[in-house]
Image (cartoon, rainbow, N blue to C red; front, side):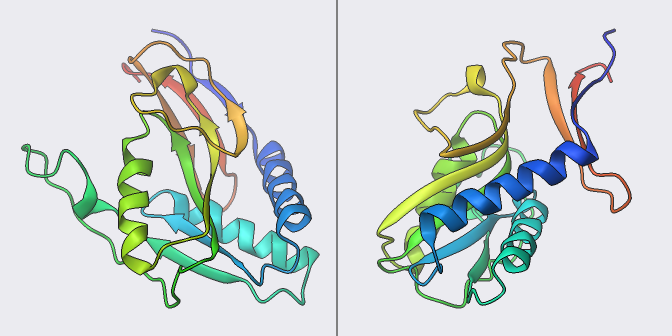
Length: 180
C-alpha cells in the first residue's frame, strides 16, 4: 500500500486561490459581464473562497455568483447509482455573460459536460471557462480541458483518487491509492 501524497498544503492552497483571483481580475476587469458559478457539491468551497479573494483584492467589484447542480443532466442517471441532488442557486440570467465554472477536481470530464448542459437552462452564455483545483489529465473520457488549473496530477492509475479536505483549520489536497 502506497503512502498518501500531499498535493496541496494549506499554504499552497491559499497561494493558488490568490493566483486564480489575480488572473480573473486581470482578464475580466470589473466582472460586469462575468459570473462565477461553483459546481455542486465539491466546487462550492473553492468558488466561495475565490469570491472572497476577489472581493478582498477588488472591493468595488459587483460579482455575480451562483451554485449549480448537474445531477439531472448526468449521463449515468438511472443506471443503478442513487444521486442526491443539491439546490442550484443562480439568481441571474447567464445570457451573454462570461461564465467561470469552478470545480475541485477534473477527472473524466463527465461532470463538467453535465454542468454545461445544466447551465444552458439559465441562458446562453457568451463564453464558458473552467477553473479546477486539480486536473487529472490522463483520466479524461471527454475532450474537456480547464482554462485555469491549480495543480496537474499525471495519475494514469484508476486505483488512485484525489481527496480534497476543506476542513476549516487546515484545508489540504491528497492523492490516495484505492486501498486507503
